[in-house]
Amino acid sequence: MEEKKFDIKSIIGFVLIFGILLFIMYQNSPTPEEVEAQKKAEQEQVEAEKKESKQNEAVVTTSADYTNTIALDSSQQVAAQNKLGALSYALTLPGEDFTTVETDVFELKFSRKGGHLAQVKLRNFVDYDSVPIYLVKDNNSAFNITFSTSDSRTHNTQDFPFQQSVSKSGENTVVSMKLKVSESSYLEYRYELKPNDYMIDFSIKSKGLSGVFNTSQPITLDWKQKQIRHAKSISYENRYTRLTYMYDEGKVDKLSQAGDDDETANNVEWLSYRQFFFSSILIANDSPFKNVAMTSKNLVEDEEIDTLFTKIYTSKLPLVYNSGEVNKSLGLYYGPTEAKTLKNYEKGLDESIPFGWGIFGWINKMIFIPLFGFLSGFLPYGIAIIVMTILVKIVLSFVQYKQFLSQAKMKILKPELDAIRLKHKDNKLKAQQETMALQSKAGASPLSGCLPGLMQIPVFYALFMFFPTAFELRQKSFLWADDLSSYDSILEWDIYIPVISTFYGNHMALFPILAAVAIFFYMKMTTGQQMASQPTQEGMPDMGKMMKYMIYFSPILMLVFFNNYASGLSLYYFISNLISIGIMLVIKNYIIDEDKVLAKIEVSKTKPKKQNKFQKKMTDMMAQAEEQKRTQQGKKK
Image (cartoon, rainbow, N blue to C red):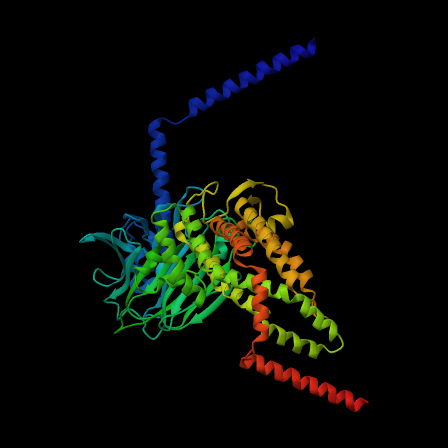
């Protein structure tokens, strides 16, 4: 009971002490007038200390200080003059941090610091997640000129504030960014924007700086950009993200598609920082750049971690002085990597699209691009792919006919060919001679079936390059596929499975499955015919066994490899193989009559067959080999 009383008393005591302390503090607190006077005195003391400090030590300016919009006092001006020389004048000029300009296709933001484009938003496009397409955003791009001045200083334009102005030139909008040395002397970035145009007329020009520049030292334009991801599969997008450039009057070259790379090229006419379906291109309008150093670095090492950027590009482009001044006319293209759009500028920019090299690119540019453009002009895109596939298969149907005719002839001749090999089983050269003689008389050569098939390879590869780069297919839906330029996912999972996720992905696409099934049945039918007609040869690989493996290997390859590819490409292969199966059945059941083929072979055997140069040479070589063999056997005896 006493313990409880003690606790109550202690609490009362603490409350009383606390109340007394509050009373004393209240009594001794200063009046509002005294508080105001004390604050004023302290502020004056701080200002005096700051002023004394500025007088006793030099002001050190950094790149962060260059954008200061507040007028410098006399001591800061002296320090800036000592550090920056003539360019210190730029620090005294006011301005906004960013200038925003909009056109029909752009929303652009120009940075006062450095005078370059800090943001490029394409108004007419969104990415796979309905987010607006940005080619430049959040400091992913740097545009800088490094130069020396006559007072032995080296400067970077990205560190200085530019004075901006926006004006009109007819329908065009002109944005001028000037790095000023004085009111009449400056280095200017001039951007001229045209209505509904992705090309920006861009120039770098100096005025009154011939005495400021140190022309004995190089002046270099550095352009650096990290490519922002826009597609559903970053690894697939990265496969078609590549630095491409034109040099030496029309030659086109590229940096590595997969790994890191660097190159130096002379007489560069344009540089394309391609990000799959969108490109940032710098064009030399007046004269090519000399000795350009370029690098490309792959940023996607792990698709689960590296999800924002694909590659980073850098270019060092030397500028030249003309009477001590700089005057360079350029073009800046920010827009879709679309053939018809790029071709309008007549600078070969469409060569930056990977249509394929040599004949493959020619087939795409001269046949498939115009054909698909015509069909998609009045048909839905998925239907246009099917119609184009049908047309291609009809044109190439004679190739299938030649292949099946050759297989039918070889199948009919197989018993005779086997008899020849059995008869001359101890003399392979003689067996080969008689085999060639029989095939020549019958007009049935194995090569006659292979050569028509080789004719399909250019078409096959051209279409393989066409569909993944066809901008027209981007975000166009067909059946269950919501984007024919990307994979058609019907099932997805979040769990990362090491081997499966690496090679197959974390989704299942339906069109590759359908294409794989169609390829399996097509190869089952055609390979069975080939195996029946293929004679066995001692000492040679078992072609029948190899063909059996191919029946299963090809569909599996289609299933795995194309799971991340454009669904438009898988749709093409699916329809193409269905049509091939149909054509094969028609040819086999209604066109090729084995009895008639046999009758023609018998007639051909009776006719004297004139050998071509290749056949005659092969026959002579075999005869010589046979003669040498008999001679050697005679010597041994």
